[in-house]
Image 1 (cartoon, rainbow, N blue to C red):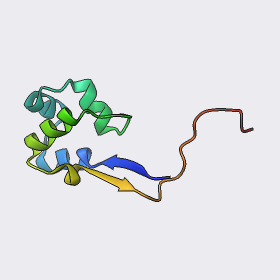
Image 2: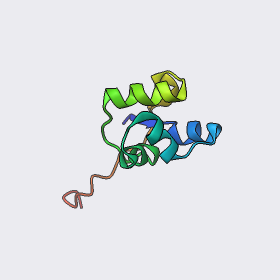
Image 3: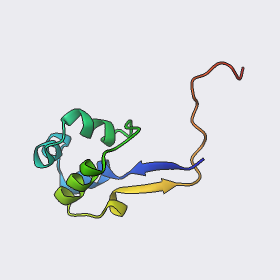
Image 4: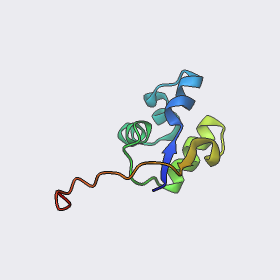
Length: 81
């Protein structure tokens, strides 16, 4: 199953920015930045992607990528056992 990942952590590290720095520059809530940074977000608003890319001076394709070889995620359901 394919999975979308982001390079936000690496991109902030390259710039020596904190999550708080990015939140200030974009006006996006720090919690939302944190969820994306730690790859916990299950959805991302297009407007947030645009703000993040504008702040980082990058394209969306620099920020996001698809891992076509990602293992299936455990749904947490015990019905298969």
